[in-house]
Length: 216
Image (cartoon, rainbow, N blue to C red):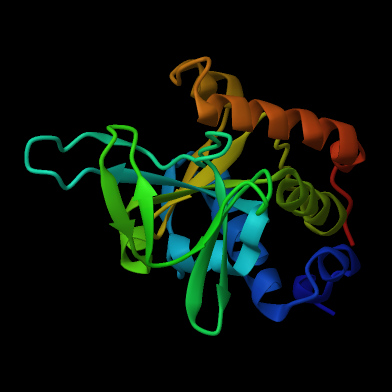
């Protein structure tokens, strides 16, 4: 049958593209885990991955002000709640950006005018997403990946309560210890808060996925 048609994977991600993305991410994570590596190439860009997985790969965008006397750099934030993570989708060839906490907070079709932290206005285009986009996996994606390893890949383990990854550009960045990774981030920073919340959600909803691997 093959891993691509595993029941749990199909149930969570019925679309063929989504399943391919999950398996590509999982393959690179396990490759880096076994080799003791930290970064590995992906076949798709962060923008392509975010569009395929929507909210299961939360997108954070770094913007640099283009004003000559400014040049300040910071994360794009929802004008309603200041959330810095977004979901990406595409409709009739137009990329849409929405606050991760809900499209009712803020949603825009690109290109769109946005206000930066420095106070200046800027126009955000789909092209801007190709370089400044960083993706963090949500609890469902991590839970499905852990379940695939546990139920189908004997000899491997993946525990997203202790390890994880993020994507920048076309590169997957793997970290073997979530505590060590979070220690270098600002404690009240959005990324630290997001990862901590996801780890709690994984523990609550997918805790049964961790343990001894089962050979199919």
